[in-house]
Amino acid sequence: ARTPADSAEYAAGVAIGSALARAGFAVITGGGPGAMEAANRGASEAGGYSIGLGIELPFEQHLNEWVDLGINFRYFFARKTMFVKYAQAFVCMPGGFGTLDELFEALTLVQTHKITRFPIILFGTKYWAGLVDWMRESLLGSGKIAAGDLGLVHVTDSVDEVVEIVTLAAQARKEMNEAGVEDQW
Image 1 (cartoon, rainbow, N blue to C red):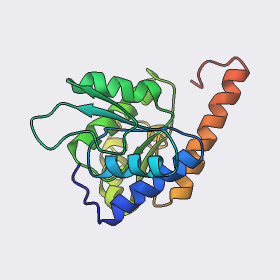
Image 2 (cartoon, one colour):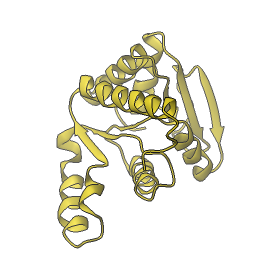
Image 3 (cartoon, rainbow, N blue to C red):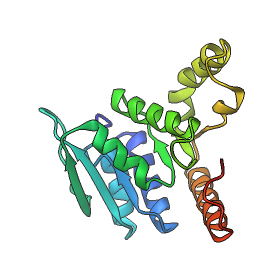
Image 4 (cartoon, helix red, strand yellow):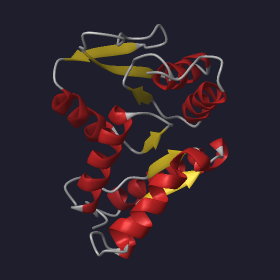
């Protein structure tokens, strides 16, 4: 919500939203300002479907003008359920506690096989480097996660790579469904 519209991160969000929309994906965000607005704007400007799952907060949050379909939630748990229910991938832009909450919720659900595996992409290698190092050194290093769990996260600075990861995962899911395989676990 706090990403300035004149920042490189905002521009990257617009580019990612646009590229995903051109690749045939709907873009679903928290529907608020900042990075969420950027992705919704990119999708909308590219002629794609732009969805916002808003949250009722006493300050700062409102649906941005680029949302085609907006739904407001009172509770975070219901909103997060909708994010993972319809997601084919998570792309996390640099963000705060809300981003971290949604990131780790998705990682936990994928790791524990509670949902079908989908790519979880952290955009901005410099921003996420400390967290990724901590996961590798502290979590993996102390045996709190398995080595394969680190493979659940992709880190990139490339919009093209984001689209490639999402597209390949969607194609693999389609092929599995056509073959009658329900889940890759």
